[in-house]
Length: 226
Image (tube, rainbow, N blue to C red; front, side, top):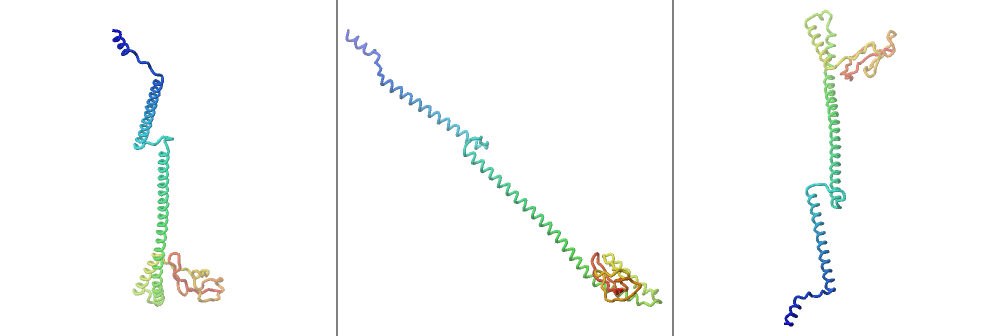
């Protein structure tokens, strides 16, 4: 009976604890807790990085101090905008230059066309003036008794029509007799002394001169007094 009670006591007895084993177990528990804390921190950083990447993909602007990657992206955006503005400015300046060159070309072309028209009209008028001279000589040669004839009146009407047509085209005769000699309008071929006339005054017109608008197409051939 004593032996059985002894065995029961040994089985139910609480085992004594070893201090060194308790210390080792506490250390292992602390290390496991530290590892769990570090793993939780890494998971939090990974989640934050993923959130930042998602915001970047959504097109939102990175906040100030978001990191070198955001600063680099903003730098390239600013550089691209500056290059675009510079290109627009260059094209605008080139357009202004082309418009100015075209305007100068248009004015130059109009001036050349006007000059060519003036040259062509001058050439034709110079060829018509001898015909006018012959009309005047023919009318001057008609005897006084025949000036009232139908033939003489018809010739005079044709002459007046020709002169009127020339005047409408801008051709006007140069006044000479009694005017002061002007080398720009008159061509002196003879000199005469006449006390009734002043110095360098046109005494006689030998051939009538004409102007086309503001230019001389033929100088007056004149005799100058004194």
